[in-house]
Length: 336
Figure 1 (tube, one colour):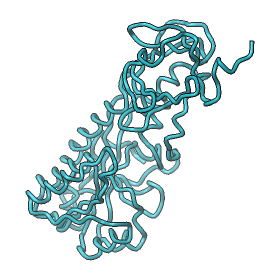
Figure 2 (cartoon, one colour; figure 1 turned 90 degrees about the vertical axis):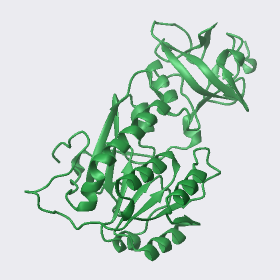
Figure 3 (cartoon, one colour; figure 1 turned 180 degrees about the horizontal axis):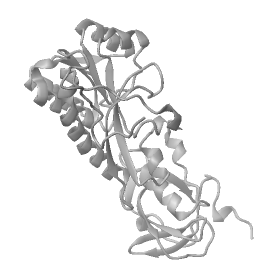
Figure 4 (tube, helix red, strand yellow; figure 1 turned 30 degrees about the horizontal axis):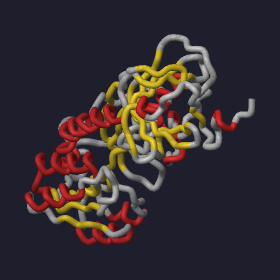
């Protein structure tokens, strides 16, 4: 596949329309990014929007469900709240859109629904496809120490994130960026890329580019228990692991004296620090220094223990403490 420009994947041939024009667009999605995308779609072409399809996700801390209600009401848009996947597909069939734009959707869209919409479904995947197809595509590159991340507008197919790419955007990952910083960068970049491409899609003056399937990589979905820290790894890896899973995600964690400790904020200590992996080496105003597997350390700054959250020094008060990936490990259990 030829390299895509930073934000655009569109091409025209002597002004000729390459695809059918789109007159009826259904927004399908949720969450803050979905709301911003919907607002931009309305700003660019209110007349093409035939409705909003969302889910009641108020049990999710990232929900902006009331904001979808308010925006749809203010703009006289039909708001449909799907009860389940079957209900969502029924609503799509009823509205008969030419195109569905999907952001923040967590149910699979069946093959019959995919083929029933003439111009298909375009979604956003938080990676520079074909890299990082699959689950948790933003967490994995941060864990891996990538210096750049991005997203792709792509067509849904029955396969896993393997459809043609309409546009991509990318942002840099700085050494002190945590995932909340990167999400904010990506959100702004997504709106910028949408603004540059959306009307080309509606007018049919854009064609997607096939992915280079020889360069594909995959990533598995992550679950809360996958955040268990291995202190035998190098400090850089532990630091990347922490910042990749911080707010708004469940957080990386470790055990200290048999209690689960979640780590939300930390930084690297650059000098050599000899000690045993997981050992608390120093307590200071900067935080709690913990030894990693390469005789370096990271400094824990903000943590939570139970339902209490705050500075690491409020919870870890002794250099006799030890961090462990195993709940039963504690110096109290060591017979000398």
